Image 1 (cartoon, rainbow, N blue to C red):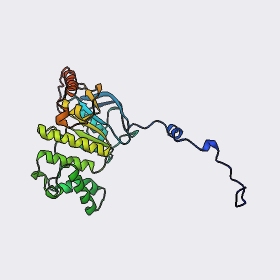
Image 2 (image 1 turned 90 degrees about the vertical axis):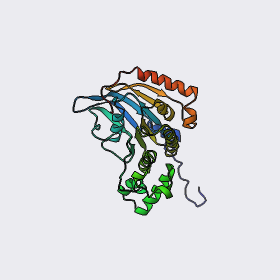
Image 3 (image 1 turned 90 degrees about the horizontal axis):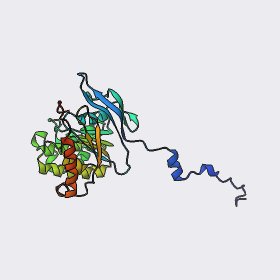
Length: 295
């Protein structure tokens, strides 16, 4: 009998009390963030860019994963990125399934941000207006989106006071690419797709951009797919590197590489780092050159 005279309530049945571990187990295994299941892409002219490509990227909480993609020109590296992004003419695949978050990709989405090699920008918009463009499309008020844009301008290493009001023609290549990165990452995508973003930069600027990207990736805790022709860049940035065969491209090898825990100009001179680079270079040089470049 309780002190208020009411009969004691029955204790909750043991079956209703589920330990956290059991609850997690009952929820099933985590859904991969990106999955390719025997994906093939053949264009209207009969050229097959990739064939039977399969891989699974887990959704790592509070971390994300950095995947770099290497291979000869024309092997379908960009095709893989654009299939994830849902961008035509690479999308849709002609065979297999491309899944993001366990669901088939149907179209581009804000959960996937794309950064291209060329410095895409609206020439009639200022830096801050370019960076804020996605937020404008979402309907965010002008004052709020420009404040957020100036924060991202700072985060990518530009000066919000000096650079926010400039137009793209007033920027160097490295500065324009920083703007492109800010414009993509301001939307907080779960997946970041980067297609040779540093390919046109001089070596010193390129290393600085690599260090910046590592810093931003760790802060965002996103999953990154990064296409590059630079073996040093792939080994430095990646948690894993996919080596793609000549067209029709397929994954020849998946290599775990050491994490970028030191600045690029330091780590890329170390013997252990160079050993991985030379091994991958030997593998890629043995591949038959593709007859179709620039894919």
